[in-house]
Amino acid sequence: MGFGPFLRLEELAPDVALIQALKERWDPECHAFLFPWGHMVPTLEDVVRITGLRVDGQAVIETTYTSYQEPVERLLELEVRGERSSLVGRTVLQASLGVASARHRTGEEQAEYLARLTEDTRAVLAEEEGEAADRDLRRFLILVIGKLILGTRGDPVSCRCLPLLEDLTQVGSYAWGAALLAYLFDSLGTSSRETGVAGFFPLLQVWAYYHLPSLRRMVARRRGAVPLLQRWRFCHDERSLRQQVTLIYDTMDTIPFGHVQLTPYVGEDDATQPWVERGRPYFGRDIWLHCFNTVVPLHHRLVAWTLGLHQAVVEFPTRRRSWERPGRSFRGIQQVTDWTVRVREQLDDWERRGKEVVSEAASDEDYYRAYARRYGAQVYRGTRRPLDPEGRIASLEGILHSTIQQRDDL
Image 1 (cartoon, one colour):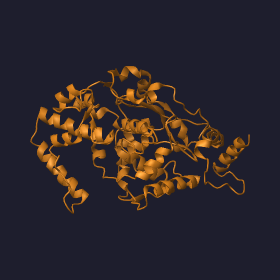
Image 2 (cartoon, helix red, strand yellow):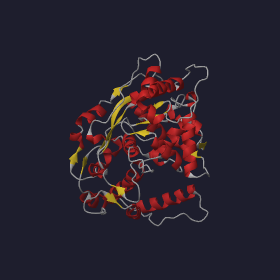
Image 3 (cartoon, helix red, strand yellow):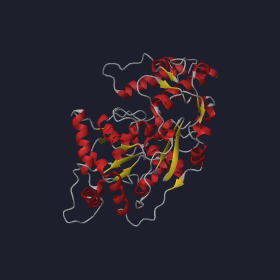
Image 4 (cartoon, helix red, strand yellow):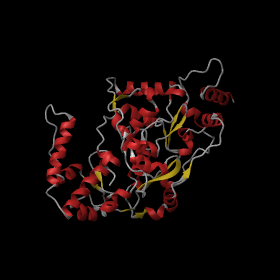
């Protein structure tokens, strides 16, 4: 089904300060981070290299329902939480797989605990066959997809993906990695008062490790391992959360532009990562991402320089469609909606693999000026980035500061 590399990933401790600092830089209109040096955004290549999840294939999109009670009872033999709900209790799912009472033993290492948990689970599942085995497989997949890939906050696990699991032979044909990215983009766009991020947050951490190594938030764990998430672990920080976030902000303001890694995967041995080769036709393209009732754009043209191209001036995106960021009442399952019909244009775009990003620009300077005019007050006010004392523009700093100054003088 294509989940093998993902399920073999080792645990990555959450870097709450880094996730919070990144969320503060997120612009929900253009679905990208706003840094002093320009836009940056996780792409489908980042997803497949870091997680090993498939980013090619069928879009994760289907009809959403007001209640999932019937398919949950029929396919999982469980109950949802409430009449109009898609949620099942995590502990209920774990109990159905025979691992509800599993706990760490005193002095037991994480690897030992996971090995024991795996052994216990296999012992339970080995007794099942036929329809019972299919039921348990769906229970396991609901836990993986609903709690890890498209993880919700708190205990409940969403069963919205259950209709896609009815035919188990088709589960491996879906682009679960693209759905992960769509769900994460949507979560980053929530209110700044919500400091947490739903979804697979380790993607953001490792993405920052590769593209912003000057933050020094990581320690090497297994050099050469793939997927790339297995190579790193969080460098534990004893300082308070407030101190850590402030330090990350200050570092982001002063990172030399040359220290930002725009193409960090050059030189990777792709022969050991077959999932990368399968996803390559989707790399470097503007494309719509789908995750059930969440449809978001991946504006790769805003970060053409991650393809080794000069960044041309482009029209900075604005939100024009109500369903790009639905209100909370709509994001739920208040009505039956066939999303393959509702977003047919965007689904066709996915099936055409979007649009290739190209650039005829000879330099980045026009983009820097336009970026400063658009985002100056939001990104650069109070910045600690030093001006070039000789007036030379070796990167974008001089252009940004001069543009902001000219605007403020008007």
